[in-house]
Image 1: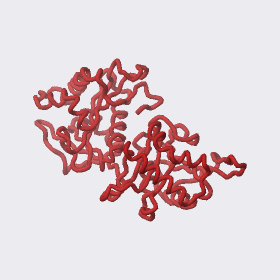
Image 2: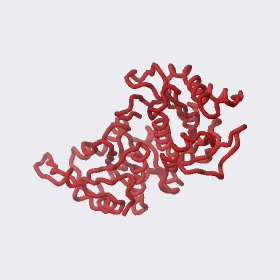
Image 3: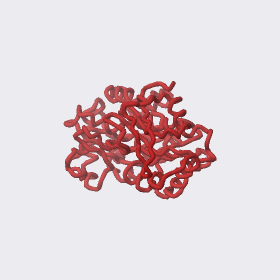
Length: 348
């Protein structure tokens, strides 16, 4: 969870951070517009139950970069919680919720709040949550402006009073459709995803040994990058997959600064004509938006006509200046086609 230009690193909380994290929360909220209000015993217990929050989802922390990931000084924190956890208060069903977003008062102005929110959004996306929810007080005007910039929608019908403060509810949708859910692959799904993506390519194309080896290297991709799966929301069946790089990295030579590339888009044979490929591409665009990137790019071959029609329909355009002739080991060659689409561009 690292932006190459940021002077900080965002990662899951570690044991050595646990003692300092509640104190950071106290300091951040005391410096805010509600710092004059008394803190209830229930709220104090919530802040100090770091392990309980982590067990309910994930506790993320921002630490100064260059500390080897151990974190000598905490700069910020956020707790991402599942809806069925004891500490979630506005999320329901398959939604997730972010609470206790806090930045050290001495570190404010460096983009930490935005970075923690983006990391929280991506965490919930990886779970396959329907949406990320949060609530904040009316006087938290800077936070409310941030949520609006990030694309959260106000949900007045889910506002709720907590003590002396009315929590304004916000929601960021994470799924393209109700019948298809996209999430990160689980470790026990490697074999099934390997079979799915190999079958998706082998059924339409003659694969070289080298390309087949790249396609089936699912475990390696999951270790170094991100392997996403589309599942049938009713049955849980795996019906598609695509791979993206982790934040701050690339998965191909194509991507440049400000761009997100993806590879190995595949749909199960029995799930074709359901729009699964379109859902997965939409998911990649959403991931790029969450990361604050400007464009999504990809390579494809001249014989992948169905994929090209999909990209054309979704508003992608050819990047002719980035295309090149790829030489196969047997001496034959083909044009490696490049496509790109601005994240905020409307599909044609």
